[in-house]
Image 1: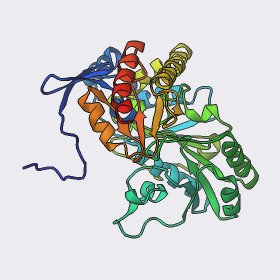
Image 2: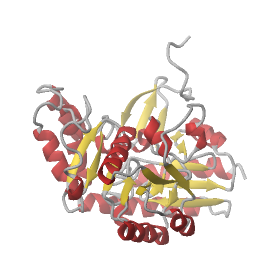
Image 3: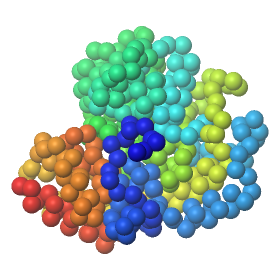
Length: 380
């Protein structure tokens, strides 16, 4: 009898050890991990530089609270905003917290409350973030949500233009919808959003919780689009497995988040920022990002060759890819892949999501693709 609430549909394996892309369960079975803790383990499991950073910081200071100056936060913020059209950072503990902060900041800065979001989006499970999420399965059963979120079809320019009026404070979107099915924002939609924001003085919130920190082959996914965000939320890959989230904002927002307007007890604690600084210094490197792009091209090429059938459609960018399986419910495939030694995660009911560590090797890609081919092609 478990003493845990059963709010997770847990898989019946217990992972106890990992190194890089490979993990082992308590029975000693080996798996190729293409989940990365759901896009979290940016540099793989137990990366030596992260282990060292955590060990060194743990011997100095664990927690002091945000009542005091933090050189670690200052350094991490400077690294994150360098060469971006963003100037300031706030650190918290998770993606949902980051999106809550983004929503609060947008409302307070504009004095307006109406925020446009999109169907199949996912922004978190706290009340504000859940209200911004365009999936009923996330919101059902919790009573009245936070008001004044309008949910529109994703990549529908006409629907967006029709919804714009003087009450809109912000537009909020993921450049690639992760939980919603690996749906990539189209160039036309990104351009339309930016034009609308510029014309109507509407803030743009880009949720990079899953797409950020090199996952799509650039520091942030918005850099590959026409989007020029006022606020960017981040988490997951930022800590490489250690809990940390945050937002980045433009200079115009500085005075809005003044003393007492928002806060967190644990956010940006010394352990978290030490690890995140190490992750960012590895990832925000042109050579590293080029390798991510090359690995993405290699993985997509191998998938296209292995799954050479119109039933399967490969979508996404970088090392955030999805396999649409012809409308099939993919839950059964996920279980079969796990049994064959490959860990993946769903992106909605119809898409298998591939999120390997950014450090994955070509040999590991080959192994994963071979398992995918054997499992999926046998189901035709």
